[in-house]
Structure formats: structure tokens, C-alpha cells
Length: 436
Image 1 (cartoon, rainbow, N blue to C red):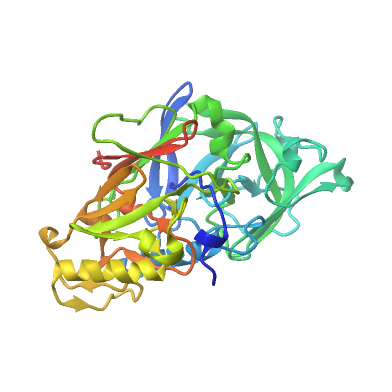
Image 2: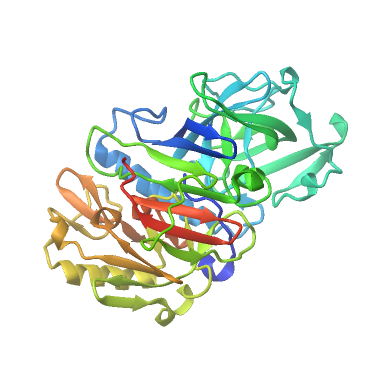
């Protein structure tokens, strides 16, 4: 498979969130914050108590590899990332509001939910949205500007007063077909003040199928960077800014701290301990790409310009919906060798069968400092950003080789406040205790 960094261009907007259930915590005009709950948390409908910790970790690793491949589909203008994301979002749609649960997907733009009448729908726990019962639902005309602005196929449905029809296909061959419309979306619950997004473009899916997880969700929440994503549609109301702080999750413990995402200037923390790197301008505008010049293990540095096709502008996606940090095989082999030389302990096999460099027991002081050298930003990763428990007796290097795209994953981003300034096209990082 060709490497997507050299053959395909992407511009990711959100990263991150990406893998959870969003719960509203506070709102104030154009500034509000939401709690993130990981999909493997006991509070998630995806949580399966019959699975062991090792099995859950193995599943998350495989989702990382599958996502990397789907991001680099040759039909990138039509096919978007896998719908099986790491996070979920609870929201309400329509007037009166209908409570809905969707997969938060940083690899797609369109937010869609299953709608009546359903020609072909998967089962879901919550009631299916009926647009005829919503006073704020308004179909887009097929001659409208937004109907022609999509980076996915649209057509004119002449059977329904020339409404705009969409067809979204995902990297795992799941799909949704339906009508584009504007509708009111709300975040929150009856116990909290709600954030209301009026006239938001959404997809009303009448024909949906694929690998959606049974009755656990009703569609996709698009958090990419294109015109149809929720992030882009909030635009000026959040000042083009959002940030998130992901608490460490991949350790065996009963208490799982909540993570947060902030919309607007809330959560941004300027200062001398903040490092900032520019976003690369890429097409299509669904993904966030950064430029990584090299990686250091301790004082030893690997410069990417010495590795053929993995060096250049926008060579890595930042994505909170991917667990592992993934590099091209050429880079990963060199990086693993550097880490192995620095640790000098006997290695063991990974119980999950997914990762390549593992140790039976390793103390924090034995783990070398790994620095990601982004343009203008040297980001020093802590031990829990680079090694992950895969059982009660093994720790593994949370980086892997991928024949898909290069991705800066969510383990590496944990305990950093990651801020996105879309107006000035840059991303900032600040070391933070995200569990507080």
C-alpha cells in the first residue's frame, strides 16, 4: 500500500476527541466545556464487563491500525475514516428535542442520525428521529450552496421537492444515505443549562448499514475540518478555538478520571511552558496535519529528512480518536532500536499480540524521555505517553509501525492541554494534570 503522507493530502480538524460520551458541564455564551468519557469506561454503552483488560487493550490497538488504513483510502474524496471511533457524544436533535447518541468521528465532517422513514436502518436503543415531528427541521434544496459544497457525493432528490441527497461511505464500507437539512442541536441535560446550535446542517439517514455497533449508537457526529463539521459550523461563535485535556486511561485501575473538551477561549493557557506548532494546509479539510521533523530518545535524535518519503510538510495527523502513535515502518524500526538501546532490559512478548517492544516490569526512571520535534515545538513526552500497561505484568511501547498514515495518537497526548487556534492555524501543547 502506498504511504498516504506522500500520495494523499489531508487537513484534520479535530482530533482528538475524539474515543467517548460527551456530558455538558458549563456554558457561557460562546464558551463552554464538556466532559469526555472513554468508550471503554464503565459509563459507556460500549463497555463489556466480560472482556479482560488485555482484551480491551487489544481491541483498541486494532482500531488504531484500521483507522490508519482507512484514513489513506485511495478514494479519499469519497471515503472517510472508520466509523468505529474511540469516543461517543450525547446530544439532542430537533424541536422538541430527541436525545441521541452518536460516534464522535474526527475523520468525517457530516453529523447524521437515523431518520424515519427508514428504508434500511440498524437497531438502536433510543427512538429514531422523525423529522416530520420537529418544528425546526428544514431540508436543503438541491440548488443550495451547501448542497454543492460537500466533499462527499450529493444529488437532487426529485421525488422530494428537489431536496439535497447525500451519500457517505466509510473506510470499513459502512455507509449512510439520506437528506441534508438544517436542524437545532443541543448539548446538555435537564439539570444543566443547554448549549443550542440553531440551523446546523445535518444528515437525516434513511438508508444506513455496515459495522455500526448494534443498538449502541444512532449515527455519526462529524468533528472534522470541512464546512459540514460541528466545529466549522460553530466557527466564529467559539472564536475559531477549542482545546481538550485527555486524562490517563490506559492503566489498570477502577477509577477512570474524566477528560474535557473546551469550545472557545476557555481552556487556553498561554505562558512560557506552552509550545506551539503550525497546522499544515492540506486538502481535503477534514483532518489536522502537523509537520514532525524528528524524534529524540534521550539525547539521540532521529531526523526524518534522512528517511526517504516520511519527511515533509504535513507528514503526521494529530488525532485523539486513534490510540497508538503510528509511524512508517522505516521510522518505527529505527525508533524502536533507539528505545531498546536506551532501556537495556530483557524484553517479553506482548499479551495482546499487537505491540512489538514490551517489558515484564519497568520502573519510571528506566523509561527514556522521548521528544517529538514538531516545527517550532519540541514536545517532551512523559513515561505514560510512551509506554502502556497491556496486562498486570507487562508494559509495552505505545508506538507502532503502520502502512497507512502517520498519526500522533491519544496516549501520547494525555496530560497535555492541546489547544487548536483555527484562525491562526496552529496547535499548542501545555503539560497539565488532566485528571483534575
